[in-house]
Length: 451
Image 1 (cartoon, rainbow, N blue to C red):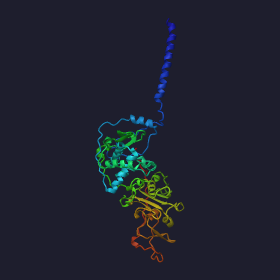
Image 2 (tube, one colour):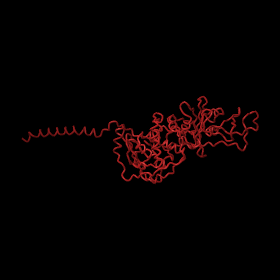
Image 3 (cartoon, rainbow, N blue to C red):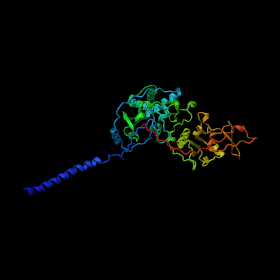
Image 4 (cartoon, one colour):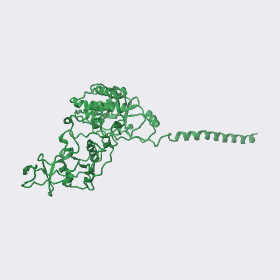
């Protein structure tokens, strides 16, 4: 009997093995297969506690390439940090009424475009803006925080400022009124306690690269809120003095009277308005052999005059010395330096930055583009025929256009008989040409992400 039972046991063992493999193999395939919709695996940023002596970097806007459902699942798997989550101190908005009106409207735009017409989400966004303005890693004005990086096609901190949302989508007057009410309360002492000292947030259907390097502390509706790890996320780090010099934001002119430039004298020197088209326009190339100089044609049908300045700032990036000269007539655009007198006279816009000498200013040809103040206008010039000599009709200082163009200032001849409207300048008042710095360009640093 024993020999006859051995084939039966062997057959049962084989059948059991086949059944086991039939169950195990599909299970292994399902377990190790990538989730449906995931384009690539996550590569989390290694967590690093930035020491107090080192200011934390604000990461650029960049997302993991995930399907929204995969992103939600990943975000749900990230635990909230344990420990206390203290509320921020009440904030009181500084400045005069005009500056406060600009800050309120910048804050209203942020809460409305980031959280929609929903009061709880709006209060959470407003608290993050206030936390940022108090932190030394961010700009020190409300408008500066909200529109940080808006002059770049990527890298803006709040996506609506550089993705064209201000142009594409318009809210009703009632919705703006509710958003301004939330903004006014936040800027006058109201605190939204649940988000504590959060400086970053994003919606739960995206995964930004910086997420794993920060502490996850709160969730409000579909937004997740984060603070820096270590000392930079604690209350003592939020001690920066806030400035009242709120810039005028051209992109808000259609929504805000405070940003229409009617009070030009209160606009901070060097503030660059925001133009949606200028934020996405292709960047010009510097002159061959001169990385700090740009000669370009500007199209008024595409860019606003304020957009000229924004494009120039984008082109110059972080260069300590940079000059940009633009013409609205492509037939008159210069291609080399130094400029000829006729090219200087036909120039539509100029921008010069020379940080070594504390100079940073944009000027417009006000015969072509009307400006709110004469301080933004190029000075009128009269050129002596066949001499390449520019004689000023208003004062004895060299024009920004002349300084940028690299045209040498030559003493005027002793007699100007027959040249009406040009006065002689005393020899002692003739200004020397501005020194041409040759500092190499600095790569623009990336910035963080608000959504």
